[in-house]
Length: 100
Image (cartoon, rainbow, N blue to C red; front, side, top):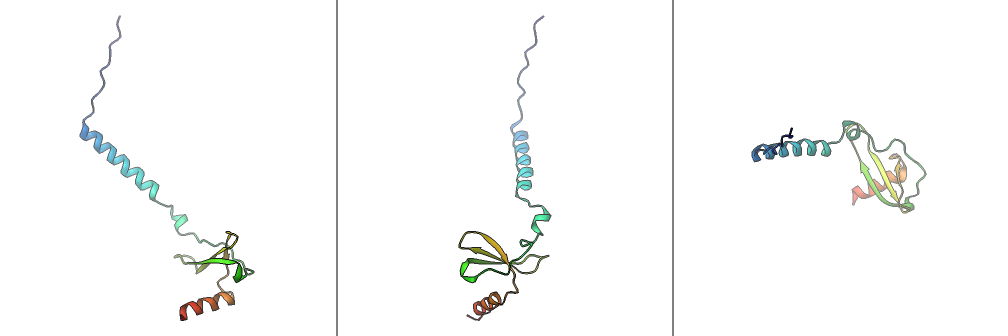
């Protein structure tokens, strides 16, 4: 008894294109989205008070919906730390920048 050969199934090009677009839309949406917990989370969970202004290379001020103002300092050593926004020298720095 001979086994029957199966012919390859030809797929309609329109059906293939539609399937490809649907797959692309589903996966593109999932990969671009961020979970709500990451969007609403505060960047700084703790802050430091003992950073010298001379050791700072860059300051970033971040404010999210559920968090107060957060100050992130990139140090000359390339380390990033969160600075207490209530530090007097930092408040004076901000006043000087705003007044210029």
